[in-house]
Image 1 (cartoon, rainbow over the protein chains, first blue to last red):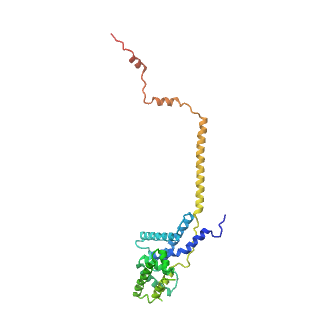
Image 2: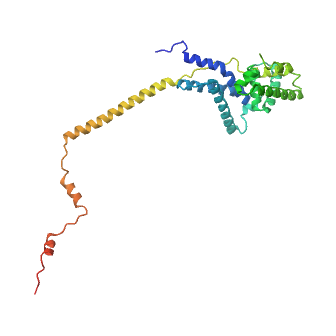
Image 3: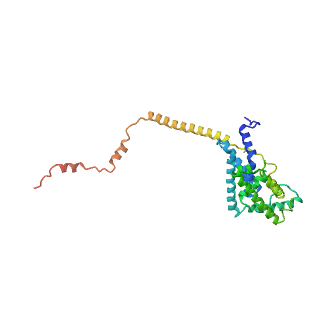
Length: 181
Length: 113
């Protein structure tokens, strides 16, 4: 029998979960590594594992919590493997920011600014980077961030304010805060 | 309602920079999930069938073995084992006594004058 072009309810439900939570997974892994490609790889691996679990008939009560937990574990495993292979950090994390848009003239200045911002982000605690990534990559508000990270909204607000303040101070000291428009 | 709106108004240039940075880092377009080419379901079917067939073959082998044993048993009924082997087993570690010696020991020894 040939495969039917119509999506099965099983796959449709899975794609709904993917569409709803894949960006959150990417954001958390990106916050850990500040590397978009690594975050994308780990996000896809996470959902591949979820798919296999579904195919095997395993019942997952809370898929969102499941994928977030698996993604965190995979990100930590990546940290260990990167340390084993390269010493401290993977070579690609030492490079500048990998821009998605290719802009020859404006892009260079922007990439330089992004590179310095990235260096400052690396100095922040991972928990603060998670909040910043969810806030600015996904446009999540405080309550949504608190729900994803399972922490108090007040703590989210405080951490976000502190991280922004620290970044603003450092970038202003380097003359980047006023330069970027 | 956005709880971070007051923060956004406090440092708009900082927000613009962070927005640009993180949005720039996100993959565009966002990749769709690709179903793996080989799913586990066909493997499960193959595995189940192989398990069943293996068990059937094993059962057939055991049945053939038992049938063969019983059939051969009817053709060759149990008989006495060959005497040579049986006797040899008995004789192992056994020493025959000479008959003359036994008789002499039972009868009184004649006195020689």
